Image (cartoon, rainbow, N blue to C red; front, side, top):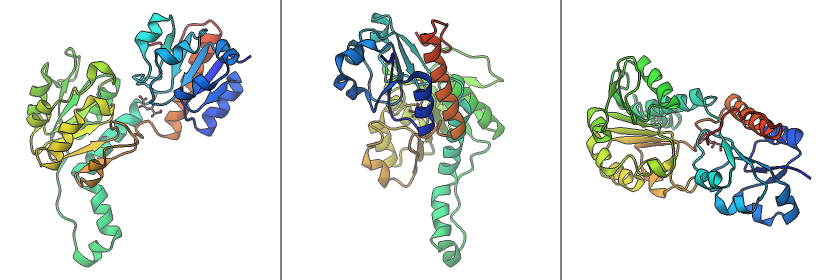
Amino acid sequence: MTATLVIGPYSDSDRDALNAGFDPVLVGGPSEVAALDESTRAGIRAVAFKGHHPFGAAEMDLLPALGLVANYGVGYDAIDVDAANARGIKVTNTPDVLNDDVADIAVGMLLMQMREMEHASAWARSGEWKAKGEYRLNRKMSGGTVGIVGLGRIGREIANRLAAFKMDIHYYARSEKDTPGWTYHADPVALAGAVDTLVVALVGGKDTENFVSAEMIDALGPRGVIANISRGTTIDEAAMLDALETGRIAGAALDVFLGEPNIDPRFYALPNVVIQPHQGSGTVETRAAMGQLQRDNVAAFHAGAELLTPVN
Ligand code: 8YV
């Protein structure tokens, strides 16, 4: 009887490695757990979880011997950690191995937005460059001011990169951090008022829902650009859409959305928004490292060894 349940949409290579390592039962998402027969569910001790659909008390209670949920991803907001704690279930994630890729996407999206690279590319491809001449002037990123909302591991990588673009780095975090002279703001609205660009690098989950509020968005102002690589939930999305549509901020560069991939269609109509399909960690190299770390946690659990990257 297998002791491992694999939940989520995995790449072929991850699925092969999971099959080879654990001979697991595989399902596409948490909603399919209930359909497994009772004796299979009773034998499951570890779940290898991937995806953004909630895995909470109801799913845990279908797996009475469950001791581990190993998440594929640094953000584990889909997993109800309080429910796990109440049942003595450990949760692990995959931190650090994705920091570089997510930070790269944040910087790339900001450049795309400010230098209008998507539209400029379309200008060249459509023949307008040849027919009408130079693309219109856009906006300088280097040397500007940026506010990092959340100076965790990924936020710091973003700040390091933007410092190399000679940007003046400001940040919000719950407490002041040791930095090379970056400006700390205890008040996120004051942070937004002090900068032209905001990069959101918060942890997802209930505590940070709508953290980037209508008030912060207004404080950022009409030259303001927001980039988000965290979770759609961290920004008051309705307030951001209103501000984008009415020119109260200049633009946005977003890798994450509420309800993704069924994102609000208002985004598609906005030329000042760069849209990425939640691909921050999506390189072959990083996904391989994330999969390996997830499997290492599952293997450690089954061997009774110390978990590599526990979150509870
Ligand atoms: C996802 C992510 O895990 O690590 C995270 O928190 O958001 C991503 O890397 C990815 O979408 C795989 O499901």
